[in-house]
Length: 451
Image (tube, rainbow, N blue to C red):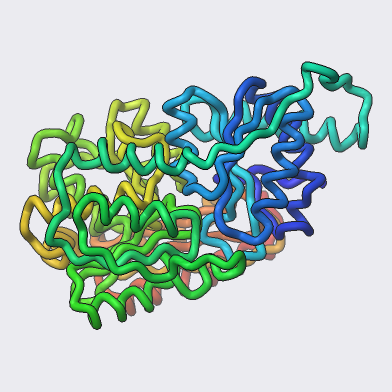
């Protein structure tokens, strides 16, 4: 029955891998490991969302929790409510995955994703429940101690007010022509509402969710339709969210994609120039393009690098007292405003830079030149944590060839029998050639026994 926690909660095929029975057990385990009291439960627009939200809520209530079902809301929306009210929360979403998948991610009181120790405790409790079976031997609350499940449809408006009041300090986006792709997801209502209230001239696409069209050929993973609408309508900018609206990819007036690296670079330089970037430092992951690092160095901005995952980014930001960080995928964290990546908030921040500077997005994005990047996933017979050490000579030869003008990253997957090979180089051809040789080396070594 159990699914292991990945970098963003549990995720699987809804009603097959992520079943109602598992959701009930997860709710029970969550109360035991995170705490009782009040809980918020939100979901995106997938067909399986109400089913899993009901099951999770039942599990929480069966352990005595007071559950508030807030309905459809972006992941950063429920995280904000958790942060503001000091209560635990859960989000039913598989983010950018196809609609048949779903997932459950938890936030501790204060809107923070769970740390490793809490996740381990939750997994251990879930395993015990699985071994006990149903109904199990543990005593559960009865009578007045049984939890309750209620609804509160006003939470989305609270989140919208938060974005309008705090994101750009009372400034307006008047005059900007924006196309917003909502990915038929959780921000299909709140996203257009907020941008319009801030004064932008908004054209909305892919904001008619039917339960199965979330992320379907649209949103941050598929910006093609957004690119077409932006150029056809002669808009200033396009913004693409994913299904749960925690990430954002932009499109400039010429239809060129502006990814998370560029968005972070634009915001970092703007904040640096205004003197509001603490320690003149930004936090990114190992997957961030070398061109980003070069652009930051040129502007006197320091870069802190973390493992993949926005949780790793946020931990480094809190440790160093930094306020801006994120990932190439479009997860961008403004920690003075939010406890997690927020696509709508990121879009507002980007539009604010455009409005204040009077510069088009293409001009702002030119601060960073993206090096050609090749990513390869190499299937191996078994997971081998030592394979990078065994590839040391091959990696050294690749780095010698790049002579400091490129970058090599080889890392085993933490959950699958895969080795991920990333190469950046001055030309796409060189990046591909170096990646091919490293892939061949991985395949050769994967058939050999580990020392």
